[in-house]
Length: 203
Image (cartoon, rainbow, N blue to C red):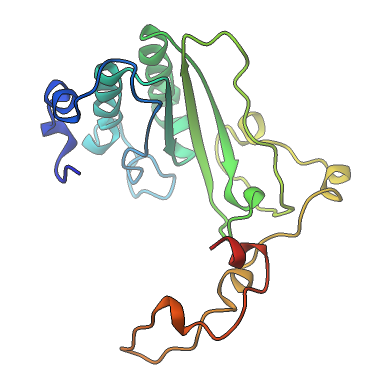
């Protein structure tokens, strides 16, 4: 593990340190800092230096040339600079030989007890097939109030909802946790209940 500023990481030294050959890694995945892309940021600007850190992510990808790439960020990345960030991600990955596609996914659709939307880019090296994203499995709903929502979010028509699992709530996630007083800690063996649902069994 390297802890530090990614801008100070030499991608060639990283490759040597890991003892890797080009194309040996299956996946490079990451989420460059999202604060500057967020529609909730006080000021959204391409001048925010955090909004250029995706270039360092791509620099590492160019050195390692994994079979696949996954980039995760907030929906605001789609609209910043009228889409120039998205265009640059496509341009650079395609120049390396990756087929690229992106979608905005809603966490609740996949059983996560959160009302979060996230933009997900997938790139696959030397791939001629279709890149697909997982269809919603849970009937969670939220209002998508950002640019690109209509085109990039996976729709869930009303008739489709009857085939989905119930939304995972915060209660589903937390109801089996043992009670704890301020300042106390607990351990896995302090659980007093059996898991009450699929989410708790998974965890």
